[in-house]
Length: 200
Image 1 (tube, rainbow, N blue to C red):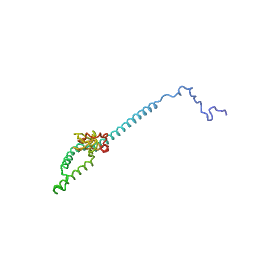
Image 2 (cartoon, rainbow, N blue to C red):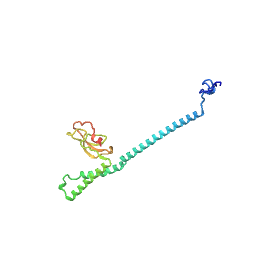
Image 3 (cartoon, helix red, strand yellow):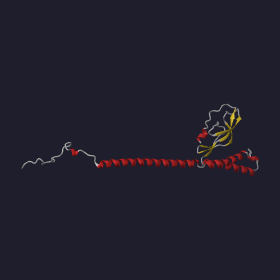
Image 4 (tube, rainbow, N blue to C red):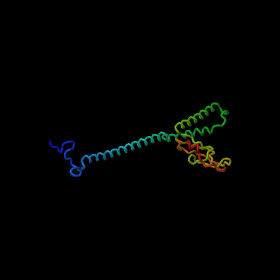
């Protein structure tokens, strides 16, 4: 039996790469479709990331607006209610120093006014409105408005010696500056730091 050159495991006449010009890889239609889909995918991913970032920014801005409204939403109301606090303060300032020497009925009225003032200050503080402590502090233009100067040689110059109208902060921000009288003629005061107010 004659031996068959195609017999065995060897495949029959395989074209050798580079000898058959039709064997060279041609760009196929599937490749361009794949590239188009990949470009579309990248574009959609970019749009998704931008949309997520915009949604996050919108959510953060909304949270900031809510927080700002929570802190400062009562600012106009608080400014209006300060006139009530001022009038109570004036009433208390006009009272006699020795309550024991006056009529018991009047004393009860005075005690009631004092209790009302304390309650009003407490309500204001619960809502973030705090009174600025000014007396004895160095003058600070961020918190005080100087209405007059008073000769006080025993007190360092630039010290608040009288509070005409108290000042208030709302959530750490100035609501109303304190109207004060400032000393002059004494030794020079240290730089006004008003650490107490800045902490509030």
